[in-house]
Image 1 (cartoon, rainbow over the protein chains, first blue to last red):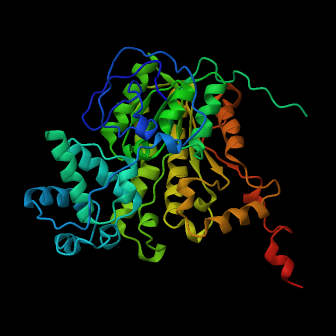
Image 2: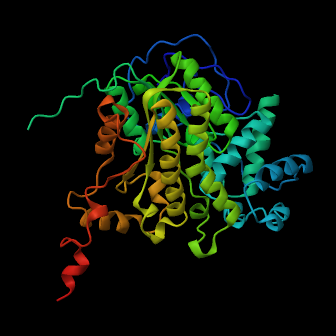
Amino acid sequence: MTVQATKSPKKKTATKSVTADKPARPAKAGISTGDEKPESKKPAAAPKKAATKSKPKAADVPAVVMPDATQDVVFDPELVAKMKKIIAAYTDQHAALDQITEDTDNNFIQVLHIDSVDVVEIIIDTEKEFSITIEDEEIKHLKTFKLLYLLVEQKIKAVAS
Amino acid sequence: MSKAKSGQLLKGKTGIILGALNEQSLAWHIALQCKQEGARILLSNNRVALRLGWIHELAALTAAPVVCTDMADMAQVEQLIDDAMEHFGGKIDFILHGAAMSYNIRKQNPYTDLDHILQQKTMNVSALSLHKLLQAAFQKNAINEWGSVVALTFAAAQRVFPGYNEMGDAKALLESIARSFGYYYGKTHKVRINTISQSPVKTIAGDVIDNFDRFFHYTDQVSPLGNAPAAALAKFCVTLFSDYTRYLTMQNIFHDGGFSMTGISDDIEALNTIK
């Protein structure tokens, strides 16, 4: 589905944006992070066909291949520091956050008292910080810090290559 | 009885709809009804809602642009008003404030053990954001004469609903802001401001409330007409945006099937077990 509007206001600040002109990302059924820049300032045509379902069909959702969480990991301290800085804004459990690479199989979402909305905030901040895209299906699998770390590292490498 | 045909109650009018997340959302239904009644609208919500929700489907259905706004940030709220005026080429006619978030409910903090920093965030997003929105619109003279602003609220502003936690306080503040600003905006620009106290509706926001299903069932049993569904709210809301309710302002209107005025109901199942 392509989402368009009759006209889009200009984006004027870095912290917010108008996304009406941006076609929906197929994998996310038109979800925008709100951080994308409009692709065009031209008035767009009215939508050709209205959507009738609120959720993507199973066939529209790409299969995700998550990193192998059983592998041994040598954490890059710089990447860990950046990720911790993002997560720190959404938790009051700072002692637990400090220890997060020590016991990486813990469910960091529970340990850090992070709720589902916080998770999405963290994902949006992470995408912005590292210029990567994390799919909705991938978010559902993110239970441990190790897995989040591996996914971010994998995506950073993919972007670089 | 034949199905009521939608008219053009809002033909030529333009407005902002804040708070649509998915097709369960009250703001979603109101946006669709506004479009059906001939209005041109602009949709807005925060970045998480845009990421989690399906607002772009609503944008397609209503031919509306989507603006990402953090309602706790005054600069962004001002920008939203600027964006709307730029998009519509002038002043707007109505605003729906349907944004709310309880940070303490999300963290499962009971009312007697609130995190007060989170409480402030709740108040900021769920209540003070209405003042920010009205102040920005007022100072920019962004709403046409006889324009209308509606904010969504709940009866926990007047009575205690334990599962509703800090949101009862937030809604009380929201209603107070609507009244207070309604005086000034009415006096100077003939803009009316009201709140609608709506029956519980099963939305994502409602899902986080403790024992929501019991709560929903209870209000449904107490209300002589039953809980008002979201589609009915949407129809009522467009009348408040229309020219047919020009002298209605500073009010909190209960759209709740009679729940707020009912003391006891024969339909409450628990009562029927008492001999």
